[in-house]
Every structure is written in C-alpha cells, then in structure tokens.
Length: 164
Image 1 (cartoon, rainbow, N blue to C red):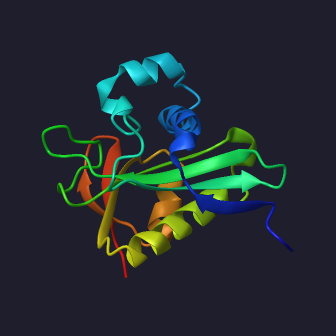
Image 2 (image 1 turned 90 degrees about the vertical axis):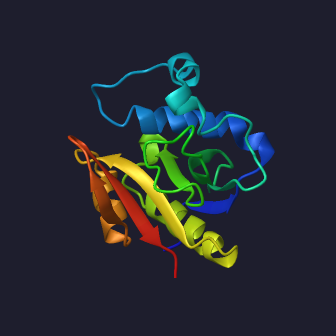
Image 3 (image 1 turned 135 degrees about the horizontal axis):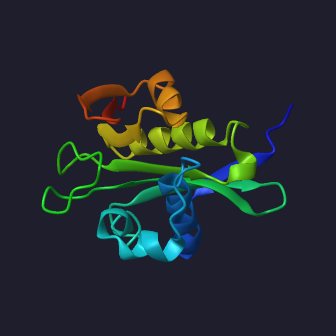
C-alpha cells in the first residue's frame, strides 16, 4: 500500500511551515497551548528557526498527496553560548520534529526521522541530539529508532543518535 505522503528536502521557502511545526513540537502536550507569537518571542524556542536556513541547517518536509505539508524534521547546530534543550556539543546538531495533528500516528514522524538521518549520514554528520519529555509519545519513537539517553532531567531526557 503506497504511503499517503512523500518526503522532500526543506528549503528557505519552508520557514513558515517549520515555524508551525516548532509550535506543534512545543505544544505536544494537551496542557500546553503557546501561540506562534509566544513561541517566536521566546529565545529558547525561536533559535530553532531563526534565520532559516543557515549554511549547516538540514531539514525534510513530509507532503501529503494533496501537496500540503504535513510534517517537518530539521537539524540545527546551536552553540554552548546559546544552547538548545538537547545540547550535547557544538558540533552535534539538534533535532526538531513536528507533525500536524491530523497526521499523527500515520508514520509521518518515523519517515521524517529516517530520511533526515539518512541524509545526515551522507553529509558526514556523525551524531544527532534531541531533548524529549518522557511523557511525550515521541520518546518511544526515538528510542525505537536507536536514540539513547545521555542525560536525565526531572521530566525530560537528552538523547543521542550515532549516525551509521
């Protein structure tokens, strides 16, 4: 059975959609309801999309058969001076992934993650990090795909993937 979506490389024109997916990622919990403006005005979130794309940014977009994007995953290096939640080292890009609510549970996140890892490997990226709250269903996806916990916090884990 063919998949109801395709995955393509992210481009500069995808900034608005990446921002939408950042908002989805931030609001993963039903108890979180930050607006787009609140997310973009918070530097700890906004730096994941600010000035997209930078020269070493890498991303992929899932697109439904109707041509509309339905999910995104991207990597960005954030320095220790301005770290992301999943910061491990300056040379390790952090993963951000978001899927439109109506597309969740249909394999979009896994397909995005696998394609991003594949392309990262082709480009010589050796490790990928992320931060995920343990209550987030995505934590199981990351573990299933080979990410391992390298640091634990009260409610969240920093995970690392060794690109093969």
